[in-house]
Length: 157
Image 1 (cartoon, rainbow, N blue to C red):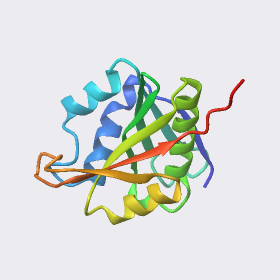
Image 2: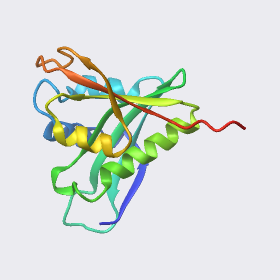
Image 3: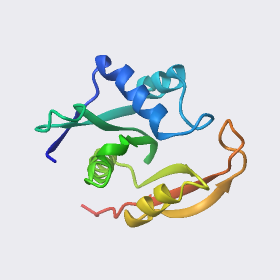
């Protein structure tokens, strides 16, 4: 599956929100207001993965919302359609977002994931993230979150 990563366009919003709803249970999935606020937040950027070739699947396959502030990056959400998983789309989105965060002079990136989301936890650990804390009742449904962090190697130049 050939995929390209591009910047978010306002006309993508409804599709991105629908993908988010399909990826997370109620209480963890964002409302339209929350997702729009995150996308439009100062310092945030949204990247979209879309299919370049296969017209049998929806063109938008996933997205990531991230932000940078004071040398610390934050992955707000990363969502990939279930039928597009296991094609390195999530990895491509995460790699591109981390590259943007490095360019913004971030020294580390953090994110949260539900304690019971073992698939996400394994994904992030494969990408070099480590659990640094537990956040009690982080999600609206009362589920705890794990706070993960990845330090970037900063070259002295």
